[in-house]
Length: 326
Image (cartoon, rainbow, N blue to C red; front, side):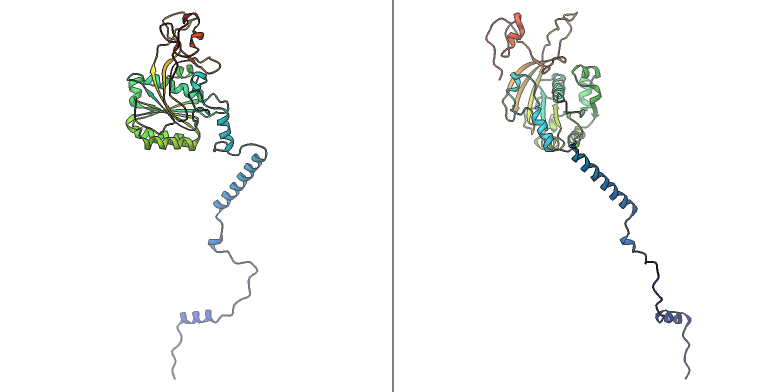
């Protein structure tokens, strides 16, 4: 009987199926590709291990391994160095722990044209916030271009005259109010700034926006000061609300020209504060004042607006009943 020969390809396949397995090789088989560790991942693991060893060594030496992160030690520092104005006549209206160092505060002008005075008082509060020697983070001010065109930009020598080092002061100009609010929130949340000031248009300062800013300040352990473009009677999520008006500054006694302006002066009203009570004062700002830099301004007509200001005024203030602040 005639048989058909097997095709060459089928013969090769049959030979492979019936082939006897060879002896095992001395070299181990190559591991599958999924079991291999990429060199980038191995390098990253080694770097993480070295960082952990470094942090553990710093913690063993008594240093804070992450000083920029919120911790109980930073909270104790904030409690030990409260943020106040440094005047007993004003600080007694504040809470016992002072102003909230991680939160939002509002500074509003009393009338049109008082916006520069509100900016000056906000900067004075920022300087008081930097009074803690442990606070080494800089200050940022987010400016609106509309307010800069109306009232001018920040002057470096004027900032230094208030006592704020120019090397620690940063400015940023933005055109859109919504972009400024986003920048304000992200700057507070970053945690690399001690105080963040911002020109906030009142039509955007609603409860939702200010609540986000307040939470961002708590996350980054930063102080936020919203300088409102005009007086705003509405509600916000800020911890305190200050209303500032321009006041006449007293001439310096040793000035060669009696018409030269003296130290900055403001008519300040604390209209709302959590844990405190409202009050009104006339305040001076003196850069070289050792204790607080804030001083009380004597009243008009020979009297005294604040308790104890008549003694500071000396012979210029005769004995008259004084008005109690608040």
